[in-house]
Image (cartoon, rainbow, N blue to C red; front, side):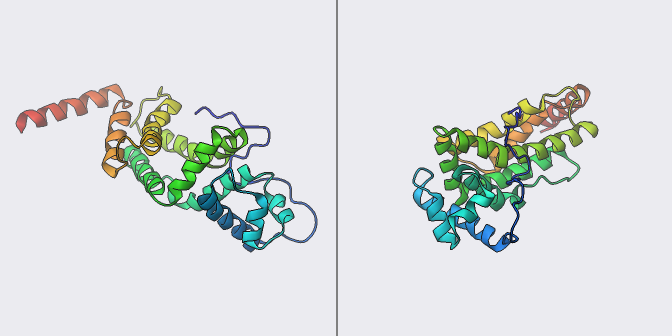
Length: 225
């Protein structure tokens, strides 16, 4: 996904509208709204979720919800992003393959947990609601994508990846199969699947001399065995 920010897009995973004058907003109320939105989304689905229901569930006024979010699409995308941000950070272990596989394993855990139903609702609803899929891209996918770029760039600087690699193509090749198995369910999402995927995709992006050396070593090992 090559990012093209929307006019009101937010790259940081949350709403960034200007703070209106008046009394300070309550972080407790904001968190209650986010939790309520996730709960109602999982129970009713996106089509039947309303701002009024979220406000009632969170024990706040409807106007309070609209102070932070322009519509329910932005609210749901932020709610999901805020519930997964800490789990989906990219580590810096000194190995690009390890960094990517550890983060991808965490994504698989999220998809296989109760949060997976929320992802399904977001992606399903987004096929007929442009605002929803745009909010998902801007508030969840794009912040993770920026971290992934930085992870691949570290790999390039360390000489693990070629300097001319197409980072968007690498990321689409790594994460596309995960989303496919999650949505189509033709096969299982497992840690082994993630590890093999990383080895396959990232192994083909190594500097050519390094790639040939590793291939020679593997051949010798197979012969020795």
